[in-house]
Length: 388
Ligand SMILES: *[C@@H]1O[C@H](CO)[C@@H](O)[C@H](O)[C@H]1NC(C)=O
Ligand SMILES: *[C@@H]1O[C@H](CO)[C@@H](O)[C@H](O)[C@H]1NC(C)=O
Ligand SMILES: *[C@@H]1O[C@H](CO)[C@@H](O)[C@H](O)[C@H]1NC(C)=O
Ligand SMILES: *[C@@H]1O[C@H](CO)[C@@H](O)[C@H](O)[C@H]1NC(C)=O
Ligand SMILES: *[C@@H]1O[C@H](CO)[C@@H](O)[C@H](O)[C@H]1NC(C)=O
Ligand SMILES: *[C@@H]1O[C@H](CO)[C@@H](O)[C@H](O)[C@H]1NC(C)=O
Ligand SMILES: *[C@@H]1O[C@H](CO)[C@@H](O)[C@H](O)[C@H]1NC(C)=O
Image (cartoon, rainbow, N blue to C red; front, top):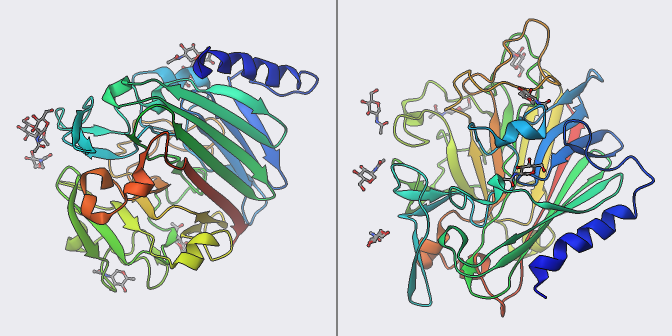
């Protein structure tokens, strides 16, 4: 019997053991887990985080993640990749093409008039229902079996995503096994953040929040549709992409001409892959050697420090939001607009160097190509909240 066919049976058994508690989906199809000072909700669709509640300096609980009010709404026509795990290869693959051991693969394109593949294709992982494998009060594990040939990728991939709450902290662990053939794997959590829960009456944008990338002196150079062009660019001190030399507001350089086109043709702001350059010791000791990114809002007094073992960090400043995507009923304030405004959120992704499979000179093969004879793909991250 193939593993993929017994998996649902295993899942049913694991869940049945917890039948005495209040676990399982609520009326909105969401699964809640919590710990001191933090609670969050998830759905099987894309193994997505839908809500994340933490308190700021005023003691008021804020929902700081974009999402929809119920699981059904995620299956509509609007699919901005809210909070899911894009897979099996996050971000863009140039010309929807890559080679492994001299064999060329053409996968299904889904962006820029079919010039490239974004987030694993038109039926990538965050368009599919994962299986809930287990849940307790503080942790939930999802799994997916991605068949050989799906979206054009070679070989089967089996993946587990575990989300765990510890005091004031959201922990993520992702494991993926390429079970039959060599294939590219790059995963992340694609959450959109609004640290004010859209409740700041004077500012519906992210521009006043302070951002810091202490290890990111370099970023990948990209073309007008955000495909890496092979260059690694310096984030020179005091330039718009300098978030390393000291913390800076996301909007600090908003009037600088340098920022025009910084996130692709006709895009002002950020949608960039910053490299995380740590020495081997810091990388091994990633839980203690300092956050790879920090974001804080003076208004709510919520500070988020992100720790991860990944070696790149994508930040997108929501330039394509246009006031049509609603925020949730758990967000906003009386008299609020009800909708996400342009620059009203920040997407932050811990991941590897984007499209490194098409830039072999970066020598990321061990972090991007997996097979039955290689180690497993793994990703770990901690999102730690405090007040400021
Ligand atoms: C789910 O949310 C959507 C959007 O808010 C709403 O239109 C729909 O009625 C809700 N469905 C259920 C079953 O609650
Ligand atoms: C782009 O992909 C097509 C097939 O999908 C292939 O014929 C072409 O050679 C590729 N172009 C480049 C520049 O790799
Ligand atoms: C995409 O590819 C087509 C031809 O295949 C080309 O005309 C077009 O300029 C490309 N770029 C974008 C952004 O659509
Ligand atoms: C996901 O599961 C829901 C609830 O069972 C179902 O309505 C929906 O059709 C499923 N979606 C996909 C893409 O399988
Ligand atoms: C922006 O942040 C500063 C402190 O950094 C604060 O004084 C100011 O009130 C904030 N503006 C808004 C509109 O929240
Ligand atoms: C960006 O903002 C920072 C902080 O205010 C400033 O030091 C720097 O000179 C600005 N750079 C540009 C290019 O505007
Ligand atoms: C950029 O904006 C200009 C002016 O609005 C428009 O003519 C052009 O088509 C846009 N280019 C792209 C690639 O979106």
